[in-house]
Length: 97
Image (tube, rainbow, N blue to C red):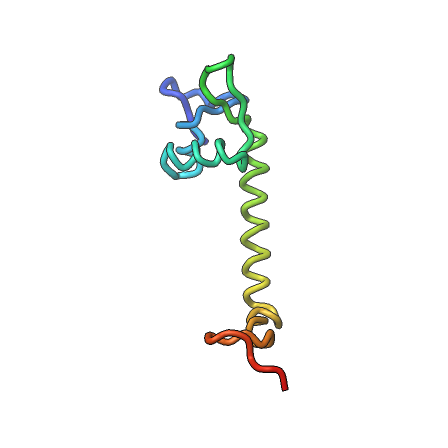
């Protein structure tokens, strides 16, 4: 858990820097997630700093875990290499018989 300098845990809302620390990424990565809408955030005032609600960050993390789980399952699944069965070849479509 991220703590303030005084050692107290952070409250309901995190700064972009706090969120970057939790995710172990740089501040720019979090800012891009916020700007893309992938990570919900609010602004304090019209032009104030962005804040990410801790519960929204947890939802974001869970969604990323689920996305990764699905991707791994798909890649290990029976139809993982479906392109081979589609008739698409490096040189284009195969001719019709």
